[in-house]
Length: 341
Image 1 (cartoon, rainbow, N blue to C red):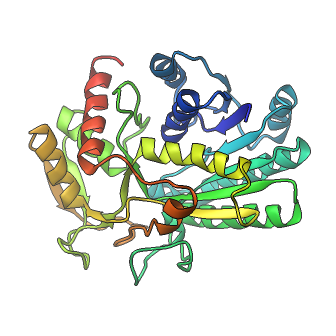
Image 2: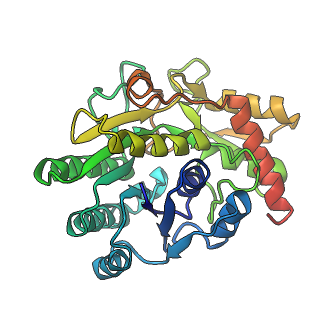
């Protein structure tokens, strides 16, 4: 590997993946991010952690000509990790056309670039949202898909596009990584999740409430058929997710893949409820969280967590960070942001 393009490199998972690449390989990294849900300060934070600068192309990946120009300037790209996408389930319910246009058109443009510029490796950022409501848990890679939100459908359709592409175009190999729920921050506390609008994900809502940015945390429903009535998710540390991308690239480069397009779930193998997350935060920080029980939220799945047997066996990937690590690192990052980090 020599040069890796990370789309959405200023985003939450993208930035942590760039750090992982820079800290564990000798690859050069470039980014493409138009800051629609991020900001340029992310690259200062990446440099603070790694000591290395990353060039970013602030382009809209839905603009095919801009993508082509970027690729012409970097015709030696060896691999693309495609994160860039809108990702809020509630927002996708409210604005489905925006999600279908952005998430699908940007992916198609990137795959066209893969073909035009002979990029051999492609990693697609997918999601457990492709599964929808599941009767049998845990979920494995063979579990039937059944997305229930426009966001989930864009990931489900995106996977199919990549699979069809690799079937017809034999010069590229791909990996689809289905994330469960990435949380936490880099262990240094120097970089983490930075929601530009009111956060929709649970952990930044918890930390923003605890520090006073938000008045309270809303628990969306406590009448689900779960052990405490609240939704269950498989939370996994963002740096573990980032490491999986580096391992996926190595997997393809070393020809360990058994098919042109490989699929892996990324989780911890167990589920944690919303109330259990709140309890964990209160335990590791010693802070009492102000929360209330609200109505169910449209598009939310009742319970989902992953079987990680396949990714452990084929990629050799297992999560290193615990739930306590997730909550402590997120809180450390929130405190650092208060100090102007």
